[in-house]
View 1 (cartoon, rainbow, N blue to C red):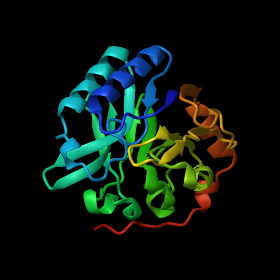
View 2: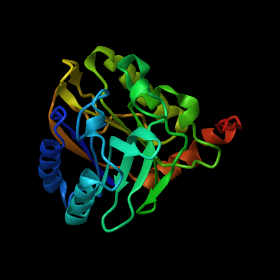
View 3: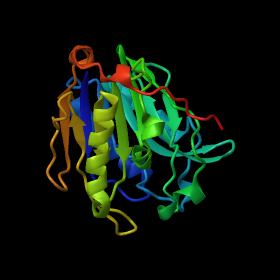
View 4: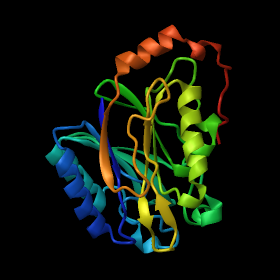
Length: 259
């Protein structure tokens, strides 16, 4: 599975500018990757006090994403602000070429940044299959909560994806948490963060990563680098790794309490 990690700066509160930027970046990886991953809230930046930026699911930005997925023959994964029937959501998405888009809402809302007052939390743990690969998407702050992300004994997913707007001042936690989630779940871990300075003057230095089965980062970025890395993650190699070192068989049985 060839995955493009798109690490770049987001235009603050400007969906049209961000869609133009994304189109340029997707054109550059078309034919080279099967999935393109963009940062959290890619169309606006981490705006937690702008309900006017929310769109309905299936609205203008969703239509543009579907058109780009079709045009470039890429699945596109990220998140954006959605106005649902019951309130606002930080919604993770996967738009598939000529297919039905999938979504999951961010579960854990970062109250220190005002997110818990702005959005409603997601309630479902989704695993999507694409081109024979099982994928789970989580969003930024979710990565701090291992029980929510824990594999069950039958290894429900192969790749754990995390899209984020994670600032430089706390980047050491991002680095540690992504590695821990990869190790404890015996999966590939891909994390995509933004770079630059947002409209609140928060600084972001990136540190997007892709961890292989040996917990080596096969997609290293320089600090503040606006660039794209493409990694080829072998599902056969992952399954062999699980067979040779079947740590998952010793895991504790558990169940996440339904709300």
